[in-house]
Image 1 (cartoon, rainbow, N blue to C red):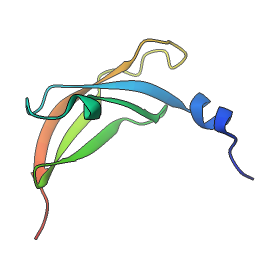
Image 2 (cartoon, rainbow, N blue to C red):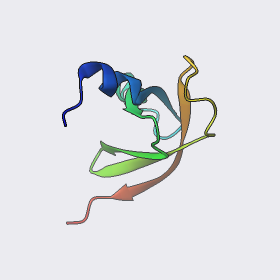
Image 3 (cartoon, rainbow, N blue to C red):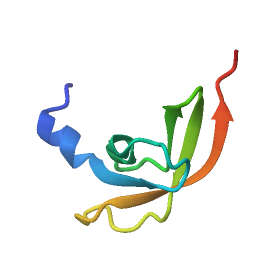
Length: 77
């Protein structure tokens, strides 16, 4: 069974990443993520910036879901 483009959009949310380094590009701060996702990590400056969903809230809402910065980890060498 394959996903249609409509199903992909229905199963995602608009997410806004808040906090973290000030030089994180604005394009990285607004994303479409899986609707059931609780965490996201963004590759940035040789490491990863970690964000966690602020609250579950109503998935059907058209408002973006806020993910707050929690920590940074470095890429293992």
